[in-house]
Length: 470
View (spheres, rainbow, N blue to C red):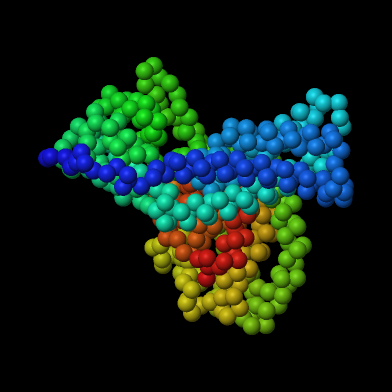
């Protein structure tokens, strides 16, 4: 089949500007953004700590050093390539970079003869994290808006023109940040292609390609190496479609084996020290929230008793880490007063992650309000305090659902269950059972304390916007 080629007289100026150039410009603006953030953080922390705008010369010198060092630290964490950063990844890296930058400033202060206020440095760290996260959120919204308008889509060619390559076109959408220019033959002529592998460098230059996406299902190893080498020489990003499960993202290590490489999947775990920190965090936060929300808890209990009678709480056996059972607590939001009746509803449903619909007639008026704002979940703070579950983790499911859908649920019981989790902040009740299971397993494969903190911050927004709640 003859390949479609541009004519020699084609005006190359009609090609849209490369997204790489736009992203490089955004990267430079992010450097300026970070310089402003650390300067404002240090000066603002000084004002909050000492209440005077006059800073001693040694403090001004440290601010100047921070302005010089901050972009270098953020560059070392690859924070100036926003096209490669998922929101949760950027969140973790920004916090880590701020901590590393502050530690570097502490080391600089030790080398000098001057004495600096530890309170000022600690306050500056907090201010820098808040400013960086807030400003990066604004930049992310801008990038999403530009992508939606088609201005930041990476001009992409797919190498490996076979059915697998055609399937990749379904993944590389405009929403994902890609604009497919064409297919490059990977040794087969079953589909139309704009070039073959040997013509790839000319195509990259002519069409201002930003990304080469390789689908190596039917390509020889030498062909894949040739494409990667051509991409490097052209200064173009090369991405290889992997056949490993999509969820195994941060738990993969590369192990050399002679001329080949093996991908080692590392099981998710927290160290014993991290587990202790997580437990301390759970106890402190759950106890604080119970004290803060105690008036609301008492009011809800009173309203349930007066409008729907007893019992106030709904109890049900759920599974947590290692499939250990416990009784979960929720405010009763339904007319059915016994756990047996509700369990029968669960058992009659073939749907994993069974949830009552927004218009379910069993939900009481006060129950509907509590579900809408997730107030019915607040008694689970007692479960967290007792150690039955954590603040963040996969939602605990009834034992019957776990037994009936073990293949779908996968490894979700490798970590403690939680009040909130990854799928709650991605849509809560609005996601399907399969999507909820996938999101839970994603959380397990990427489990970290910073991810827990990120989920807690996002949970507040999910509750306030009532997204997917009923």
